[in-house]
Amino acid sequence: MTTDEILQGLFDNTLIGNAPAVKDLTNEGLAMGMDPETLLYDALIPSLEEVGARFERGDFFVPEMLIAARAMQGALDILRPLLAETGAKPIGTFVMGTVKGDVHDIGKNLVNIMLEGAGFTVYDLGVNVAPEKFVEQVQEHEPDIVGFSAFLTTTMPMFKANINALEKSGLRDRVIVMVGGAPVTQEYADAVGADGYAADASTAVRLAKALIENRRSAAAPA
Ligand code: B1M
Image 1 (tube, helix red, strand yellow):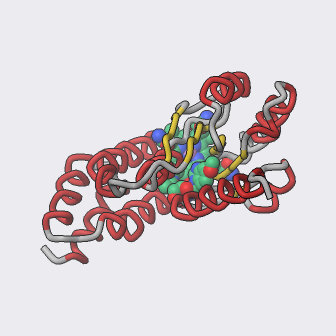
Image 2 (cartoon, helix red, strand yellow; image 1 turned 135 degrees about the vertical axis):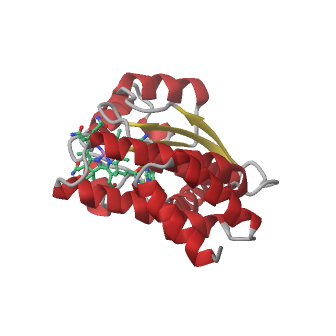
C-alpha cells in the first residue's frame, strides 16, 4: 500500500465507521513510518469534517456520526502515546471538561493528549460537566488553567455560566480560563471574558504555555 492509499483508506473507513479497518490502517501507516500527525490531520479529522457536512445536508444521521466518532477514537487510542512526546518537564496543571449539555469529546481529548505531551498535568472531567463541578475541581486541584470545550452553538453560553460560577466562588482571579471547540471564535471568547481561545490542539498548547508564563512573570517580584 502507498501512503496515499493509507490516507484515503483512513478517510473512507472513518466516514463509514469501519473501526477495525481504521485501526488496521493506522497500524499499517505507522509501520510504514508515517507521521502520527499526518494520519490525524490529513485523514482522520478531515473525515469527521465530511461526516459533519453530510449530517448538515441530511445525508447522515446521529448513528452515522456516532460510529464515525467511534472509529476515530480507536485510531486515537493507538496514536495517543505517539502524539504525546515523552520526557517533557512539568509545566503546569490543567482542569479540562466539555461543558454541560454537550457530549462531544474528541476535540477535547486531542487537546488533552497534546497538553500531556507538552508536560501539563491534566485533570479531565469528561463531558456534560456542570459549572458546580468545574468550581469543585478548581478548588480541589488549584490548576493554572481551567479549559471549557463546546461543540454546539447551544452549549457555548455555558462558558459564561462557568465563568460566573468561578466568580461567585471567588476563584476567577486565581485561574486562567481557556475556551475552545469547533463553533467557538476569538470574538466569542472575548465576549464571555475568557483569557484565551485556541482553534486547535497545537495552538492550545502554545497559548497555555504563554498564558502561564505571562501570569508567572506578572506575579514575580520586580
Ligand atoms: Co455532533 N454536532 N451532535 N455529534 N458532531 C457537530 C458538532 C455539528 C457541527 C454537525 C453539523 O451539523 N455539521 C453539529 C453542531 C451544530 C451547531 O451547534 N451549530 C452537531 C449536532 C447538531 C449534534 C447533535 C445535536 C445531533 C442531534 O442529536 N440531533 C448531538 C448533540 C449531542 C450533545 O452533545 N448533547 C450530536 C451528537 C454527536 C455524536 C454523539 C453522534 C458525535 C460525538 C461523539 C464524541 O465526541 N464522542 C458527534 C460528532 C462526531 C460530530 C462531528 C461530526 C465531529 C466532531 C468532532 O469530534 N470533530 C461534528 C461536525 C464538525 O465538528 N464539523 C458534529 C473532530 C475534532 C478533532 O474537531 O474541531 O478539529 P476539531 O477539534 C479541535 C478544536 O475544536 C479544538 O482543538 C481540537 C483539536 O485540534 N478544541 C479546543 C476543542 N476543545 C478545545 C478546548 C480548548 C482549546 C481548543 O481550550 C479549553
